Image (tube, rainbow, N blue to C red):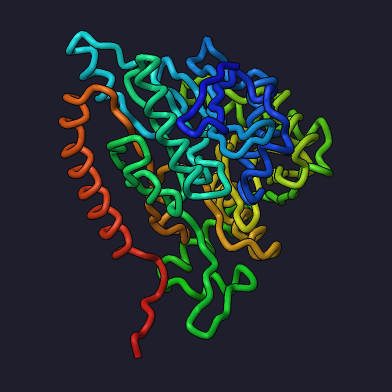
Length: 396
């Protein structure tokens, strides 16, 4: 743990190489508990259960602000030796640095490892303390001779802090598109109560396609079991992890989550863990691992031992939507990317990141690049929105 004084002599900045150095109750008092990915139990579990590893490019470098013994602001952050597991792609930036004989890595990243999920990143009780975190990150980045600082998938309401003069300078903005399901009230204040009501909002073509997809799975003799963390057996957890490993092996990627971490989630965050297991004759053949927040279900990982028509859509999307409808959840975020989600009721949603570049020349060069990228993403999002599967709503 490294300490340094801030301009306000009563406050102290600290850099922690492990979340274990910070009391869980103090950390969790800085957020509302609605997003499980910033919970101390989740982030510390990634460290202790070997999901976050220095040899994979992740070194914990958490930034905290203290007033005496009281934690008043914090940021989950890591020194990165690569760009793996971030989902905000900056490979071209690293290549440009290398072409000019400069080191892009290590860089400093505030994010949740392997989780392209929007949530609080500036954990603080006041806007002033959020700005203090940003200013401290930029100053320490320069002092430690790092190329850059990055904050990925922050909340909309945090965005204004970056543009404040006290936030450490010029934080470049990038945006991207994800696909989210939302059960928002209609003009009469009503929400969907079940899957049939949800389907009734679709146009005929898309409604028919979804029914056909679900029917194929049912005809194959597939049923589903919803397993929440408090009810999960060790066999359930091991089965889900095996499916997860299968997906990563299929695409040639390394699987970061350990079985021990999945067990940790069931033990330490039982209210958050939700698993959908597809079964045939009582034997699991596929599964999807999700986390539940305050009003949101987050789809994270899936895997299957058989490739059946419609099985992926049913396991990863339709089961999650039905769960949200039963449980009264308003939002379902099924993961990054995937235009195929649009036809299944997941509409385009902008997600954000911010970037502080230490080298003035590179910062100036990247500024118009980020503006052009943002304009292109917004055009793309508008085009996607024009292809909504839902019936047009009359303006009368």
